[in-house]
Amino acid sequence: MKNQVGWAVAVLLLLQACSPPVVFTEAQPDVVPEQKVFLPAYQGLYFCTGDSAIVRIAPTVISKERRIQLNTTTKDIEETDGVYLDGDLLYIEETNTPVQIQYLDEERILGEITLIDTLFQIGGKQVLKLYRGHQILNTKMSRQNWDVQILSKDEDGNLSLWKTKLPEDLEGLEAITPVEDISTEDVVRYRISPNIAEFRKLMDSKLIFEACEYFERIDESM
Image 1 (spheres, helix red, strand yellow):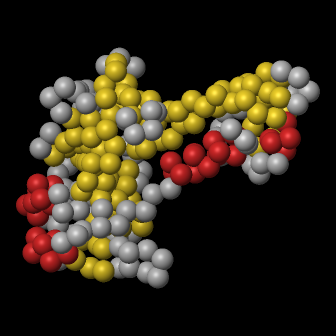
Image 2 (tube, one colour):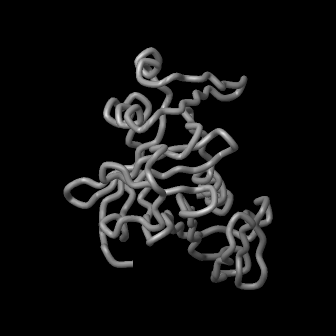
Image 3 (cartoon, one colour):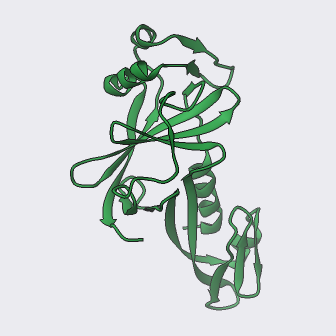
């Protein structure tokens, strides 16, 4: 593949990019207390079926790790913004860890890039709540906008990550809870402020939540 380094950087930026179409005025469910750690039953090592990444759930952090085998040239690296070589190390500005590389000759190099994306880290602007056995992941985007995701475990110990989607049945959503249209020229977005009973209906109805990632358990130990 030509210019694998540039592709790896693009993948990392894509992992970090997220713009939820439905936001909440506060962390959900509103009256449920915050949790300091993920349930032990959720912690462990998983395989993401969508992109073949490894997902690690530690007591306070969910991270996704993907390894990319690098076989490229020094010229490709020189032509890629945000990366540079320093001896036997390749530096990528979007990561904190240099990549050890091996020179095959004066032009071609080998290495392995590990992309790590922190999906959720409890504390600060990220609030974890437990509701009906699900782990509710709340991320504060701004003063009145929270991104809410749901992590659910099935009977086999595998996980589904549910994110918000644009409601196809807007009237059905409005029948459950008031809806504020905060769309801009570039982004279609709705804001809601459900109580706990309304939030439960939203979970059951699937009007705004859809399973977008599936994590197969491969190891319970960290």
